[in-house]
Image (cartoon, rainbow, N blue to C red; front, side, top):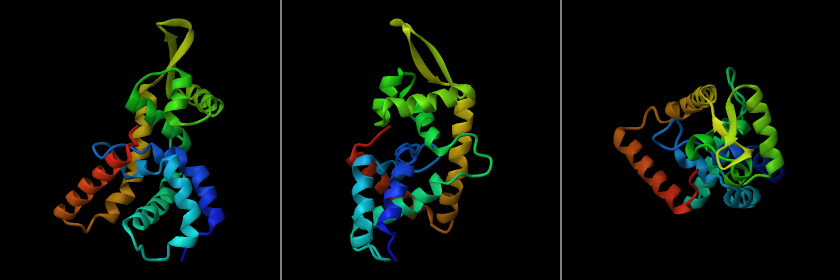
Length: 194
């Protein structure tokens, strides 16, 4: 059956940061998860209860169903997680884009600066990020991923990658390559890169 509309809206709020920031195909988790950008998920969640049954009619329906199912798995806390999934998005953004000021980080993540500031504070306390003086303005701080943050992010992605690996276990190499190619093509078409 369909996922109730309210559940979709709750899932969107909880998942938008983590799913938007999944690593690239060359990394630990398929880039398909990056398709859950703000501009796509909110519409998909609202429409799911009315448009999607158990079988996808169109490619768009299939992508939405996949994202909803995979999103739930990626948002879940897993034993041994070193970082909350919502904070992992921030670490991933720093890994992909490099060190930056808080305002630039908030803009890159399409989040309010106060939300990002709160995550930065918690991640800094745990040693997952470093704050260094901005060489252009000594009063400002640059936020960068620490070695501990990179290790925690890697472990988190590896844990989540395991269920995708299991799902693809019976796929042959040709099918896996076709999937990779098509997902890469869709990701590029959406223009939603970290």
